[in-house]
Length: 97
Image (tube, one colour):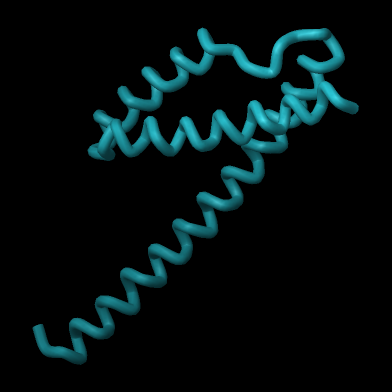
């Protein structure tokens, strides 16, 4: 492969990465719209913001999906834990409203 061909391939791959990043952001935005509804429902019903049993099930489910997709399950779990922490933080805000 020539340097020019390598550069063109690099640009093509980076364009794909940029598209995937945009899709991830949009998917996360949609996910948080749903979890906001869950948080408001929980606050209205007097339910706790966190659900450790649900979180454990989701983590195991995501680890299995990761393994079958060729993604490091440890990374996937860390990623989901960041999302869960933000969701719980948001749910706690609804209790104060």
